[in-house]
Image 1: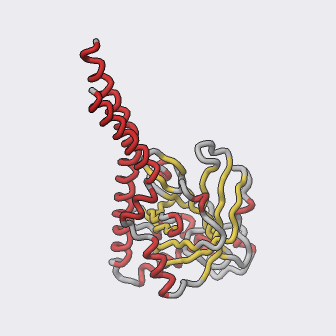
Image 2: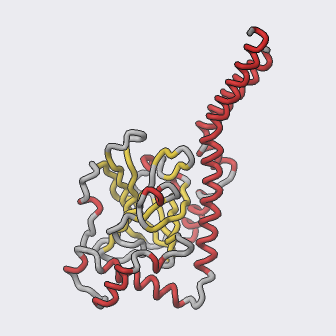
Image 3: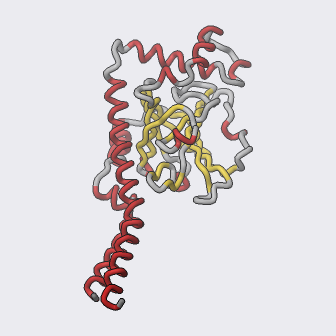
Length: 275
């Protein structure tokens, strides 16, 4: 037994090291796949022919938004036929290879594909649009809600959403172009409290939603942004630089995993050398 004790211990440490390494590798893989999905969406939207088709699809999405309560109580520029067609075509008019847009949150290094719906199958893939809320094409009397999980073993998604602060800028890309929002409200509510995600007359809102506290998930964290004009070219360029996934990005995003991997690796090498 003494002869094999060190060997068994080493194998055990290596297996443990593998368990520690798995979340890091899987999240890194998801990160790369998400980047590929983002590029695919942008290239496909740019290639839509004729270009007027994008405007037609956006108008249909706007008609869908007009069909949502309480918009029907206000002045309605769309016909009943357009509204019904929008409802029947929920989000399909914006879909490009299953995606309806891209969510960009520079302050927490997020660039993720946005999908229609918020079923579990969707939320395991990325960010979902909450059914029953306005589609993310902007406009007065709209309130879009997009949601994602926190702390999945193979994807970070909205894990760092609680780090957002008032005044932070995020934006969504779709057939409607780039829509910018400035965070004006951050609140934690119980799951049944929906007042904070309702349409407000005269406002153009987009809310980021996830579960909280982390790993407990008893409440909902809502980070609301109000629509703003596109920033200056200098600010946009600064935002783009924040999103560059260089060495600093990976070091910052995965620092805890890297620390655990380093400790585990030192332990494994120490046991091997001791043997």
